[in-house]
Image 1 (tube, rainbow, N blue to C red):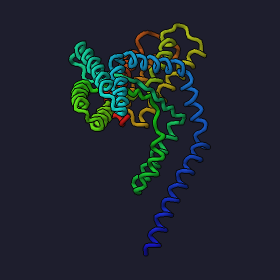
Image 2 (cartoon, one colour):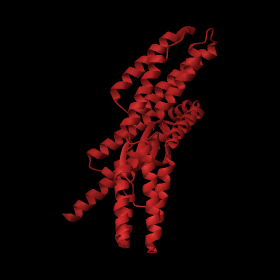
Image 3 (cartoon, helix red, strand yellow):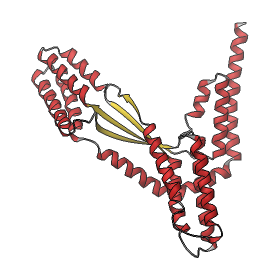
Length: 318
């Protein structure tokens, strides 16, 4: 009986694995045209999206506090001194940490976390909406069958985003912790002091902010479309360009929706607004302000996702 049960589990896993492989091969063959169209639309705004990414990362890096960076460096110097049982060097380093943190707190008493590092991770998904839908359906079927790990292998690649990862020092608890460590050092409890510093480093706060790339691309595509929508006497070629840009923007929003970025209910309104713009600009019609409502809606939507997706966790021990 046990042997039969093991064989059944193995067969089921093998069938699931083959199903995933078949899905990938089928998608490669059937969705090649759709994927090329998706890539073409993405390429139209690749430069602008990269600039937006750099600008946002620059804003985050601009918030880094040099005194906090110095405090972290001195914490590590204190650990090195403790390894050598160099009491004075450890106390000096800890005093430097306290001094730097005091400066930050005096400057901004309401600040809870002082940023010390910003890292950017980009996950650029090259696929079509239909391919992603099929992948999601396959993952759902696997989950229904209890094949969590096989489903995970599919879902782990379904991201199209920029992650801005900010590491910060929690000012109040870190400052109090440093003072407690100084007391241990003064009592020459070097091992306890060193372990306490490692524990303190593990309390660094890591915040992950997600910016969905399809939303960002849709915004940039609409900016290009707006220029043409405001132009009088467009040529037939320019009319086609405008129609293509609006279609590409819709495709990007469809990708964002199927990937699960934000409230799905909001997307129906986005599609309605794009259709409204298409009617206003058909037949060479032109004017200003056609994109204003949709651009604002997307900006608010992106800001909401950015805020809602910010997750905090404790840093690993250094």
